[in-house]
Image (tube, rainbow, N blue to C red):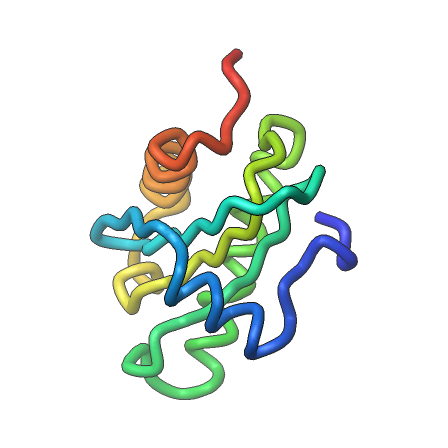
Length: 113
């Protein structure tokens, strides 16, 4: 994922959290806000209750890697924030891929293959 397609500012995250639609499961919560932008912008966050900064950073790294797996299949759908839950730390990679696929499909961000 390219860095200029990332959400970084607190105000951007807040707007997506407050005004966007929510899709979630046991491992992830996906917040999406449709905008007129021609590319999808991603933001990555971890639950504060996940523990220390080391654990929260690991969750964010896994989220970035998950989005990189879908890089060619993601269509423009606005601003997306992926919130990783504590259960991500112990889940297998295949489980996280299925979870991400399911949520991105529900949100309408994946191209039909």
